[in-house]
Image 1 (cartoon, rainbow, N blue to C red):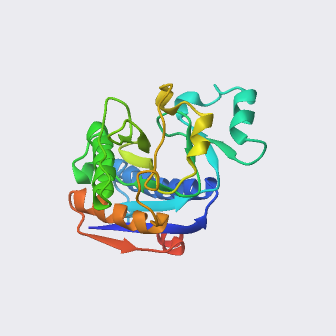
Image 2 (cartoon, rainbow, N blue to C red; image 1 turned 60 degrees about the horizontal axis):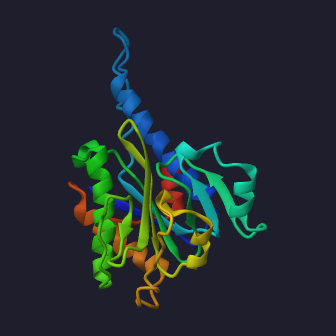
Length: 248
C-alpha cells in the first residue's frame, strides 16, 4: 500500500484543502456503504464496489487563518471573531475537528491525513498518539527535542508548543490533522489562549534555532515519517491535485 502525498504550493485558502478532504471522505464513505448494503436477490450480481482511496496526506500553508474546533462552533461571539480577524489581516473559519481555536498561516506546515483506521490497526486513541509521535520523529530529524504532555499537541523541553493536533472521525475515516510551526510569525498566537491554558507560548523551528527550512521540505519529511509508521504502507507517492479530484 502507498501513502499518497499532495503538497499544495504557495498560500492556499483554508477552504480549498477542506474541499479536497471532503471529496476523499465521500469516496471512503461510498465504498463502505456499498460493502454494508448488498442488493437483495434475485437481481444479478452488482458490479464490484468502488475501492476506497489510498491513505492520503495533504500538506499546505495558508494565509493568516484562525479556525475553531467543533465544540466552539457558534460559541465565539462576534467581538471575539472580530478580534481574531485583526482588521481584515486574518480569516476565520469554523471546523469540525477536535480541539480549540488555533492559528494557521504562512510558515506553518498544516497537514490533513485522510485514511481508514481499520486497515492500519489504529483506534481513535492510538491514532492521536500516532500523529503526535510522527511529529516528534519529524522534529528529531532536525535535532529539535519534542514530547507529549497531558495537554494535546507536541511541546518542546521549555514547555512551548510547536505543533497542534485536531482531528475528525466518521466511521473510522479520519480528517484534518496537525499544524507544525516551521518559520511562523508567532505573534499571531498572542490572540488566542493555547489549549485553553493561560500563559502557554508557541514556538517554531526558527525560534528553536533551526533556520532556513521550508514548509514543503518539512512536509516531505513528515510524509515519509507517516508512511514509515503506518502499518501496511510501504512507500510515499507524490501526486497532483488533479489525480486526487478526478480519480479519487
